[in-house]
Length: 314
Ligand SMILES: C[S@@+](CC[C@H](N)C(=O)[O-])C[C@H]1O[C@@H](n2cnc3c(N)ncnc32)[C@H](O)[C@@H]1O
Image (tube, rainbow, N blue to C red):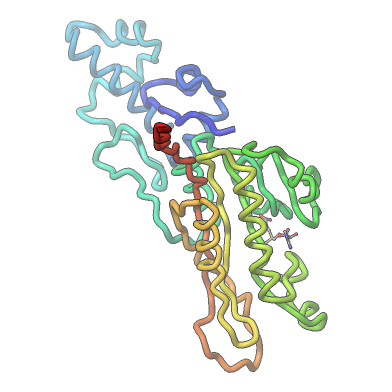
């Protein structure tokens, strides 16, 4: 289910780009959106360039003749013929692929927006530009501005079209190009504690440190089995404090992931917006955690063993 990398040509229309890349126009539109390309500006630039090239090659051509050749209006041709460079408004948060004065948008490892991080992960690591499977889908908040994965699972399914996690265990090995996992990070051992936390009510929680660790390992192993070699696992994680102890989940996960054959290929930090973990009257011993991680793992390709030739028998 992994796709080819899109080769976007700024001098082609969306339909032409789709034909060249042997994909749908929707895929090209998604590529334009994810890469923040200012397509409107690019289209104006294309018109400007066409007019200027014709004018330079055939200085004798009239406005009317160029308009006839290009199919643009007389007014448009007249406007561009009079310009020495293109004066057009660019969209401030987008990039024109023709504007060489602008640096390409650099993907940052830190963001306050989960949507931005997920878009950047797709852009950098998932050529098909959509995730294949989410094993902890919940309400699918991750996909507010993305195409939701075709395969959606959760231990406690609440949204339509989401299957029980048990079904994911029945899937064949290597069936996905990318998998997403976002487990709870809170541990609450007493029912009274659970009642107080909104996060816990919404996303469940673990009842012990061991359960948190075992579940993370279990999901890593399942994802590893379901991924093709070279496939991508995106895991959202947050470290936590429990019973006065720091639990460095993101280290535990990285260590185990590497043990079973994943390679960490990227790391993003999401800066939290709200004070979700505030507890009244508690003396502070450690920095309060206002960030979470999106770790990007790649399932390593199996090495081909160089067979040592058998010793000839005497
Ligand atoms: C933080 S939420 C996921 C939110 C989701 N990423 C979204 O975009 O809406 C955590 C999910 O993990 C699931 N979960 C809880 N305990 C689990 C367990 N022991 N094993 C697997 N999944 C679990 C919950 O049902 C919940 O939907």
